Length: 192
Image 1 (tube, one colour):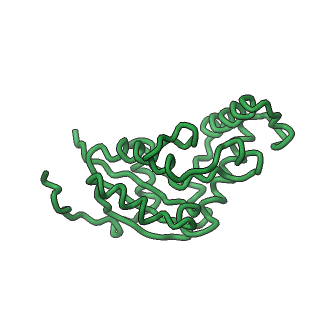
Image 2 (cartoon, rainbow, N blue to C red; image 1 turned 45 degrees about the vertical axis):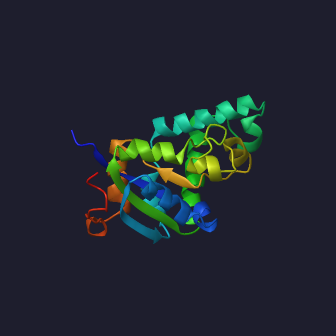
């Protein structure tokens, strides 16, 4: 079993606009993770459409999360979204997320290291502001919550994306990077 993994991090346009790229990337380097590819791109809709799954089951789960928020705050989704169907809401959220990645440049980073997927996910923090611990990227920089995003019919501004598992990391690596953009080198202290 190989414990060295590669994972994708996207500093979303809201993170780029806030000038957080250097701080975010340096956090990964400070813990010994290696940057093996990095680029700034203004993404086309086709790539973003591949990044955000267009699968009924996945979108229904996203919609259910939104409906849970509406219930938590005693709000009617029909009033602001025009529906209470979880799949339809999931489709809306997907569209908003796609729009969010195409409003400006983003920075795509391929990170390598021991258990990189789990380590990066922990460093990025929970996508929910109320669950993102201080010290995590989202805990330190996110100032948005899903219900506010839904009420305003826009994506949640969560600063970064990180691959969720091995399969997703492999898919995203191929989506965001060409092989010639990925570098193999030895970092100082890597043998430790």
